[in-house]
Amino acid sequence: MVVDDHPMWRDAVSRDLAAAGCEVVATAGDGPEAVRRAHAVRPQVLVLDLNLPELPGVEVCRQVLARHPATRVLVLSASGQHADVLEAVKSGATGYLVKSASREELLAAVRSTAAGDPVFTPGLAGLVLGEYRRLAAAAGGPAAVPDESAADPAAAGQDDVPRLTERETEVLRLVAKGLTYKQIAGRLVLSHRTVQNHVQNTLNKLQLHNRVELVRYAMERGLHREDPGEPEGALPAG
Image 1 (tube, one colour):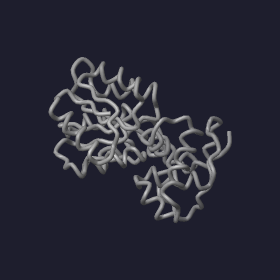
Image 2 (tube, rainbow, N blue to C red):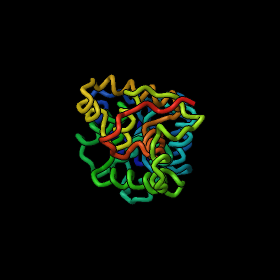
Image 3 (tube, rainbow, N blue to C red):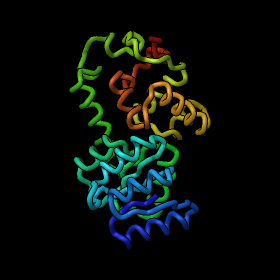
């Protein structure tokens, strides 16, 4: 589904996607219309502009994901401002692409978003990762606590943490470090589909909606930290 308030741009993106074999199930030109149509058609991927009449794109993202958490949102915006990028990610967007991207970059971003892989215009991925680290530190997470037991998931002892398998924990660590599914598959000698399955199982167990929430969860628990001397153990049972 393509949402943009400029008809020519909206039509051009829709044509490019259709020509590449994607099924464009709906389009919309303002925020309320986008929410209504998304609820009706339940798109796999929502290509979303931020600057929309009546209801901003970030609020469209929040409302759509609140009812349809399986939908992946790729923001396609003219703005490359850091504040806009972070607000979009916090609202649940899987990726963020600026409109200066080429047709090939857009098509690749839509495919990656559909697979659950985060996609960002070059230079923005580091910004998002840095923000998660800052938030974890501000919340008193492992990044702000020098005590070793606080940084060790196996020593956390949180009653509300479900048990993950060793492989799920291993995949989660690599997700938190910013690796794509393809990179994780290569490192662990797994298929891309197997990695996706592990991530989806982890999302279900932790009752999270998307990979962005998963990364934040992992970083708050110190799973992004490299510790080659320690085996990759499973998270503790409650």
